[in-house]
Image (cartoon, rainbow, N blue to C red; front, side, top):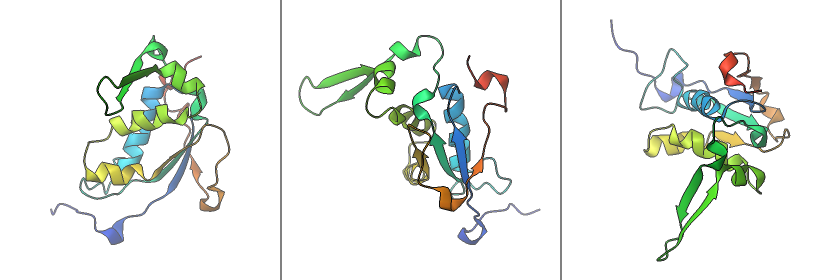
Amino acid sequence: MKTFTATPADIDKKWIIIDAEGVVLGRLASIVANRLRGKHKATFTPHMDMGDNVIVINADKVQLTGNKRMKPNYWHTGYPGGIKSRTTGQILEGKYPERVVTQAVKRMLPGNRLSRQQMTNLRVYAGSEHPHEAQKPEVLDVKSMNKKNTRS
């Protein structure tokens, strides 16, 4: 038996669309991160970008469990005393609610060059409209995978 290692000619990327309405954020991010890396494929090769292109719609309607809406998100401006924070709930109600989903997925990928390349295959939209109809994306129903994926 020889170990299979994929080459760029072996890579077959698909387009997948996921509706995030009512789905728990962490579970959604975990599924999206696995799809971006390509771990769902039998031909997974850790050092290659094998993953699919993922479109997430309705990111503003994602659910959070517990008190995670009150969890502060910090960033630093680069100036002395420039630490700032906003709660996750404020970000979801703000101008760019899709950043919550993007950050959750980004933090579930390893921190290297390959994961930064894989993050370019993720498209997150706050509403239900997206400009990728020409790619004919397949629908991945995250809600029906596990009853814990949704929150009522």
